[in-house]
Image 1 (cartoon, rainbow over the protein chains, first blue to last red):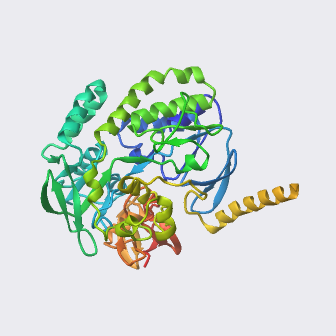
Image 2 (image 1 turned 180 degrees about the vertical axis):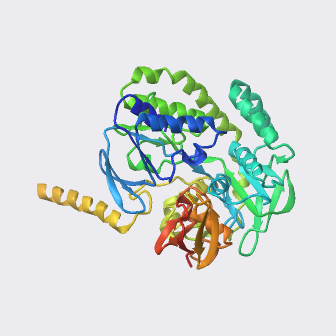
Image 3 (image 1 turned 30 degrees about the vertical axis):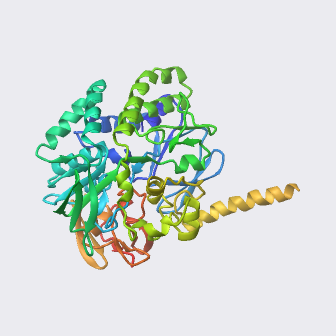
Length: 414
Length: 81
């Protein structure tokens, strides 16, 4: 949104393509009417005023040729032509498998929040929040505000890490203000460090969760488990477009330019640093894409500071090795293809596991089990192939048509 | 605009707040979205269109990510068996 508004304000023609049905990404979720979130309303208004065209419910599945994207919505597909492209694909939660994590009502922390924002009644429900990262506290506060009872928040990081994190926050006064607000919102909710979910129990849906709470086992009945182990950048589309990715993050220069020609990237895909960093990077990318490099440079110092916060998050919420022993041999790791942990243990690479077990070959294309196996087995993901999201046959036919065309051109040249 | 929307999940009527996603209607109905390849019930996980666990048929269209679609009056939702 920041990139689009900034670029459109410079007078260039801008279109925003968003997979969601409302603008605002996974956190804001189109809550422009929400008076509480002034940033969300401010940017929604700025996008409106900028004259950028908004195309929601549209997801890019392929780039058939440079400067052209193939996208699909619920009715069909279309081609989108661009001179400059800013990728802001965001991040997703990292899910680590443990026994029972496939039961209905075990959801992502952000996932449950999204469901509640999508109308799920949560008043009076008991929700255990578990995993790692600042999102857990934000989600717990949100759910509580909407009437949920939170018996415990399990954070795998140690009190030492959390203490150092708290001290380091003094460099970011606005984060301290947010932190104090969260503390007020969560008054009376126990935060347990060195803690994580061990087993989710239930027949047809979740009934209770066994947690490891600072070394002690505890059984807690609940309606929902909201869990997530920090965030993973969404780099599938950038990879498809040929952007260099290192350590899971899209590589960009000072002007947010990727290694792919005319392609910029902003926000979580370049490093998980939260909304402040994303807004700064978005503005730099939008200005740079519109040719206003001097104006973009004015944001460099602020970005530098926000990036240090991303590094702090990485350090604080680094996953402890004990979490590698959470799955039992029968625990499903790949939820699309129901591949158990014991079957994956027989393999030494992601590719080998894919070829022999179909791990990562279902509809999510490894978006859930990929980051999990990267942590569990230290496997590195393979290249990305089109379509980058499951697509309808008619859309695939359009891709195939392109490929056939290219093929006949090549053979025609011989 | 209606403040509530009536849909059906596997034929049973469900009333949801206006603006609710299809995934929410299914959870309110107490149904699983789909059965996994080995027959386990599954519900929404990521809530943001990534995991495909919440896919269902909506008005006869199969494999719709229910978390990415809003309920409309009279919508017929069928979970995947």
